[in-house]
Length: 194
Image 1 (cartoon, rainbow, N blue to C red):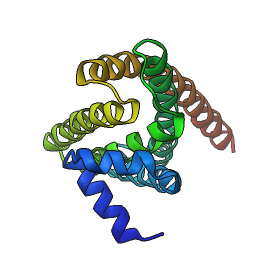
Image 2: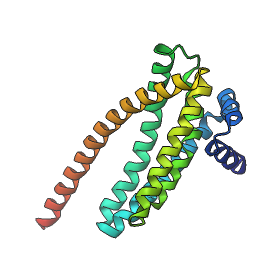
Image 3: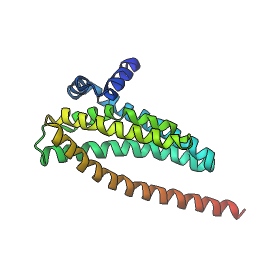
């Protein structure tokens, strides 16, 4: 894998280069690379959460936030791609396969890497929000190019898909978070009894 070429593609995707989205849509060899982009972007967000957790809490909570950021980033990516595929093809008559959406949405996630700055008081949350909105705009272009329809249908597809993904990931996050809190309480109770 050519890391420099991957970074170049991520930068072009972040610059909302329509030609890049057409290229990755058509190039099936880039599916694994798009997943790697999502993992690296999620890791950047996890590092930001980890550092923030170190400043405000314990090392255990910080590590948990790092792991959850990566896991939820990858899960959210797959859920969003499949739901976007379903919504775009069934409600708005788009034409694509799931792989095309996985590739285009993977590269569109690049701006979320700004969440690495989450640990900076006051400014970190704002920078993370800018990255999230930027990635959402890139996601609209990715969906439009992958599903081969107009911008209005792409925006509607992204909104419907994003709401569904948000609900699913919030539920998963609560389940995983509650499970982690329970494990933390259990380990605290077990170690306190010694």
